[in-house]
Image (cartoon, rainbow, N blue to C red; front, side, top):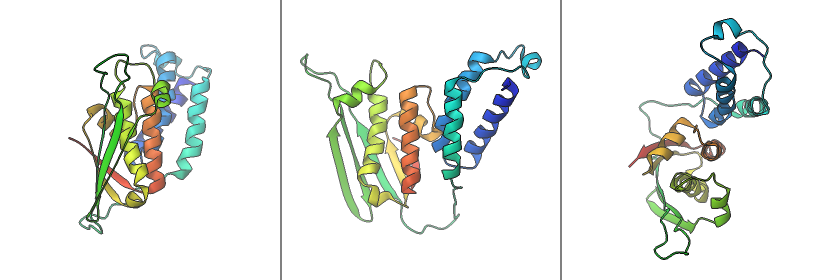
Amino acid sequence: ASAAEILHLAGSLVFLLYSCFDKVARGGLRPFYDWVTDNVDSASLWRTKDRHLVLSPSVMGGIDFFLRALPLLEPRVYHLGRVDREPVVVYSDAEWSPPPHPPLTFDKGLGGCIFVDGKNKGCALETPQHICNALAPRQTQIIPLELLASAGVLSTFAEDVAGRDVILFNDNQSVYCALTKGSSKSRDIQLLSTAWHAMCMVLKCRVWIEWV
C-alpha cells in the first residue's frame, strides 16, 4: 500500500466516525496514526506518496478491527423537541490514594450511583490487584480507574440504562476527554475507552458525559 492510500483511508474513517456514527470504532484509528508517523515525511510526501510501503501488523489489525466493527454500527437518531422519558443520571468516581503507613497497599476504590425513575441505587468495590497490574506503568492510575468506575456503574445497572438516554457525571478531565473523543494516546486507556463505547452500543444507551 502507498502512503496516499493509507492517508485517504484514515481520513475517510475519521470523517465517518466523527460525523455519522458512534465512537466505538475510534479505537481502530491509532494504528493508522502510528504508521503515518513512522512512515510519512510531510516535507517529501508530494514526491513519495505513491511509493509502495509495507503495512505493519498493527495496521493490519486496525483494518481487521474496522471490517468487524463497521457492520455493527448504526446511525444515531435524535428527535428534536421531544423527550419520551427522563434521562438516567449517573455519577461515578474512583480513588487512588497512597497508604498512610507503608507497606500497606494503595486505596483504589471504585463506585457510582444512579438516579432512575424516582429510585436511587449505588455500587462500590475495591479494584482487584490483577487489574492494576495489567495497566501501563505510570505514577498514578487514577485515570484508568476513573474510566473503570464509569464502565462499572453502567454494567452493574445495565437493566436500568439499557435503551435509555443517560447523563454521566465524572470529575476527571482526562477520562471526560477520552470517553468524549473515544480515543487516547495511551494504549490501555484506548482499549478501556473502546470497550466502554462497545458496552454502550450493546446496551443501546445514549450517554451524554459531563465533567464536574
